[in-house]
Length: 106
Image 1 (cartoon, rainbow, N blue to C red):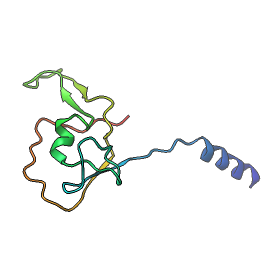
Image 2: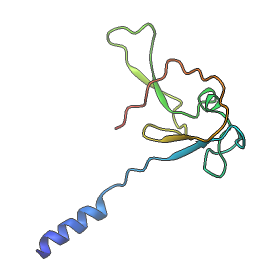
Image 3: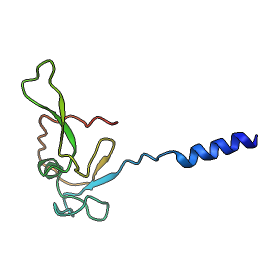
């Protein structure tokens, strides 16, 4: 029993924690210069995409051909695969998102 508990404790201490982040957009109180936190939300979801704040992938050439590969787009952007963008109440207007694909998780 002690051996099992010791093994469990070692595995628990060595496990890496995966953490997804939360970001916020508030069209009434947000600012594009903010960091997207709950206290300092961004102003517009369109601005979040237009200014490269979302990491994604894009095909290396279009139109897609057999053998094409996905390359990282906006590497190092704060919003990554698995993160959540929360939209607070307000008028967001039109949103246009083209040629976006989620980033592959490794």
